[in-house]
View 1 (cartoon, one colour):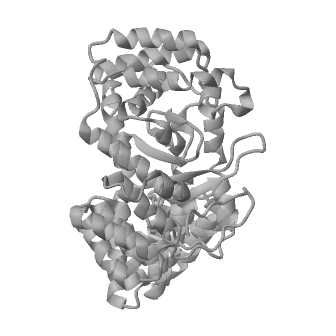
View 2: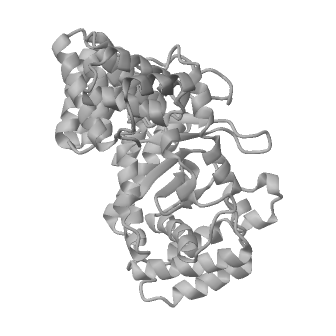
View 3: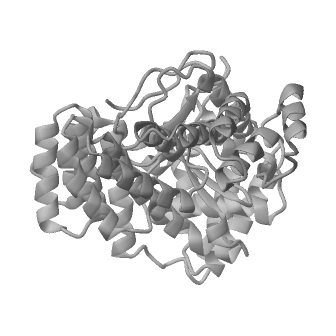
Length: 471
């Protein structure tokens, strides 16, 4: 199965138990009638790392610590990018339209330039958006079972405030010009060429002649003009790093990122775009993914195995192989490649979640326990990964640890923004957990921060439970 999207703010989530995704869609929220089609959050370790490498020198030039900035990938054909003190976001459409890493870095610099110039979105500061609780985070090949949880749909709807923030982003032409200049300064300070910045906007100069309905959203909220583009071009041409070009490694990563997106998002197009006789890695990678998305697992596995013969130490190829095997019902076979992906990249929590998902799906108590260990290790790095919590709840249910299963379900609901269900399951967990244990105290914390009822508070008061470790 490909993407699983929530097409309506009020529609219940469909059952997607044990479904492996490529670029796993976290949540998709339909906007108002006058806005663009539904958008989705996407998680993928390989792409996130490439985007982080592109962003790092620019963020450092702006005095922002890259480790403190979360990379967000939005599944949308529309061109868009955004930056805040704690978040850097990219639409897949923008990435696919960029020809070089330097063009993408130009857009990044422009967005960070808004921050450097002191501009604020009309809808308010990103730091107040509270996006983290609304991100149903997923790893490559991991979509948790949400069957029988229609209340989760209501929780996901709360993320509309995030998409509303994106839609409300808009700046004056004067601010755009200032952000151009600030972006050019950041690129030069980072030792990067400003050529891509000017070229990217120049490539979409024609957007000015379109009516509002036909323009890319990015250019509706970031108006361009010929005068502005020419002023930017003159500025960057005079900078010392203008002639610097992208390294072969950066160009290769950019091609891989675009090929991966094409394979997952546009498999029919990818089969034609990336010719079968092509011998380069991105083309073969895209075709393998595309065949997987088109439900031809044998052809996909054959291509992945050929790629692994050339790159046996590539964790993302092992990840992809495990993902394909898992989704097409070959769970025991999926374990070995997923283990290998974790061995090659032990610091990637999403890969551990993949492995954990497979282990708990096996009919083996020892494997289920090992799966619990892998999921808990992933959560030490991404404590708000909702899918890991959902899978952990499933694992604890299999081992008969009912209190821990309900606590994990409470954590899952808390991290998708459904405080009501988080509170309900936390209260149930407290009834089953040993009083005074860290798990019992954590359940109490969730109750206290999840809008407890008066009855809940009276019960806590009667037993003497106060405060606790809150988020």
